[in-house]
Image 1 (cartoon, rainbow, N blue to C red):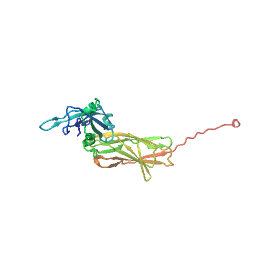
Image 2: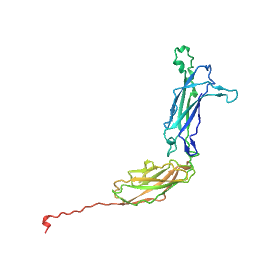
Image 3: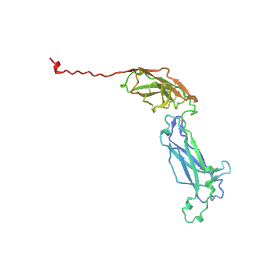
Image 4: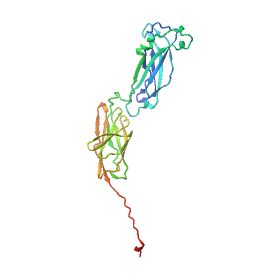
Length: 304
């Protein structure tokens, strides 16, 4: 029988540490015909989350007999400490709610010393059922990463946004390559906000929109409006963040004279799907300019 215990917490308030230790207990008090004078070894096969690495790997562990007491706790089992460290700062947790860290451990038993000696006839045998029927020798563990929210599915945040400053309203076709929009996103809640997005809608099919977390994603067209969704970074509690977006303009506006951009903030604060419109449409005037070069050629016959 094996079981895990977490020895070290990996978050204290809002400060993360990068390492933790798991204690693997392997009790032997239920073993029958156990020769305590002959060593038995355990091999631990680990499948660990890609975000962590094992700091103290060993090929096998010597299993010592349990220490038995008359009063509870009745025994102290063999303990193996497995030390892990995050591969990235804060276990790679930046702007999204992180999934739990997963560790799978399977223990098999053997008599390594005896196998390496001369005759196996002199070796005590492990029952074939030790490994094949050991239902508790395989364990899965999930370690939840704390994010600053009491309930990670319902963070107590309160998000809103406004336009930081009014951009120039005139776009010169084929000369203006892109426009930049900046929004102040505020969180007046007591916990951080994760997974918030801004959806932009316009009759203009923008080539790309570059947001604070990379390129924005295309959404299904809604009527005549093209839509793109841009992910925001983690929004700290009682804080304000400036998020900038670069809209790459198309080369052809098919004779239009103006266009608008609508913006909607989406979040899941308090476990509810919330949507807040900017409250104003962003209007842009299209100006068409053509460069003409006029030149004249004077022939000799025209010269008096």
